[in-house]
Image (cartoon, rainbow, N blue to C red; front, side, top):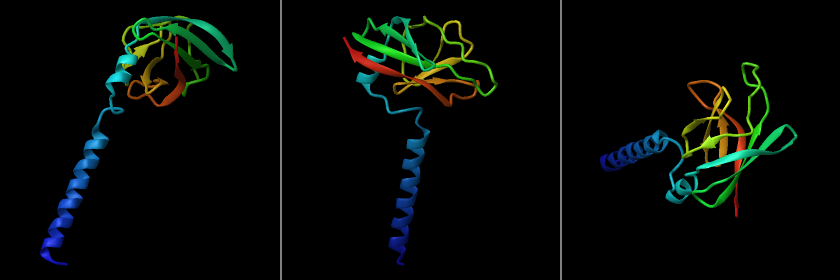
Length: 137
């Protein structure tokens, strides 16, 4: 190989490494302004129904004009404690990848791209416990 091709190969490898580091170091998903506007919720929910161990909560978002259905599973955590869900909680401004406490529940959750993630440990949230579904009014 010539000296020029070796230099170009090294520059390409370094460029790819920098690009990979940039992509992997970003916090969470790419943020979309419209998605963030839709997720800027301010609503209260009520227990709508229970089916197959899933509690379905329905809330009307006053900010966006959408109805959100939040399904939270009843299951056991790694410590063997049952998830304490509730028929009412209030999210004042739910943004992607931020953490919120469910009222009367010892376990926090966060919203990550239309999923509710239960945080089992303080250092991480790693169990998808439910989902957010969007319905237009």
